[in-house]
Image (cartoon, rainbow, N blue to C red; front, side, top):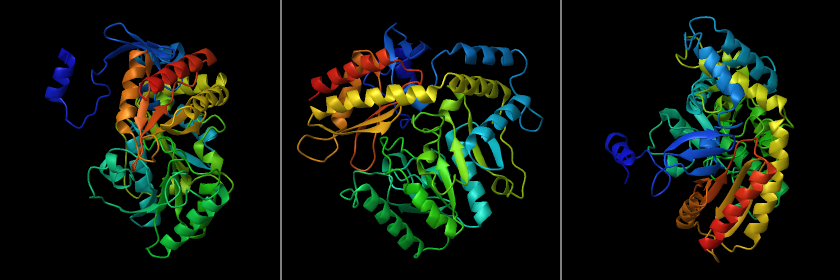
Length: 427
């Protein structure tokens, strides 16, 4: 154990997990690469948990942060704040939500907290529908709606949470059905559930479940849910903390794969928009956003230096069509990994869209999760110069691949080759 790791263990919580048997200290990055304290260079296929969205040390973001820092770092939401208004206008414009209002926060957890506050206040109900295998943050209320036991340390909650089928396509009681039958069965289950409870405030759902291993329902499932919810006045909250800003390639927002019955009532976002700076937020129709009858602020939400970073980052993403790049390069990467997986009896599924790819691992000949191999693949890939993530929920284990959206074809091929080697050497 090196000196920094020993200090970490002495002063930080035991539950603050670290990757790798010998944890890395990353000291700097550029483009899609990072370096550790020993000078080793890695191709980054996880981006600080989908947070370094465009590139490490992107000059446009670095310049915006430096210039803003030289003027003023922070003033709070109690004063007019031009960078915050500028970003809110841009986000409202691309949101797809009519008459949108935007509240800026510091994280996805805080954004989801705010969405729950709005929904429960607007609907005067503390009952929330959530998806099985979901993850929504680490605060008390967010843990209370998280449908993933590995990330839910308490059963206590200010909310009554009811869990719905549908977030995981290839497992569970409806996995054997085709897409149309799967959707119909999940809708029938939702209707039945609503017949047994007091009217809920909202359904919160990730279009692609992040921590759960990059699982997703058939396109259109949440549109079908939306029809049922709308009839009863129940709000739909789309948690876009990991799926927003074009990462899925085909769409700018993950919810747009489920848009037949209109946009969500509330959208939450974070991670990639700040490219590493602490930025999150909530988008909602004005009548919902304005429903609170008491004062509220976010001391650090919307602070000038983070807004400058987010504005520069979003501008770069749009001007360079990184959504299109995610679609093109991500499609090639998924095809390459599916070819690798087809030759490996321990790969149950390669799934995802754009640059959000999951490789689910099982013990060969079974349908049981193989977390030991997932850990071994992470270690082997790291030794070969590739950083990836892992996740999964109920009896699942998956490798999580989510590089910056500026990934090149050559880098995608390089990473896929390293991952193929890691999978072969850990069979």
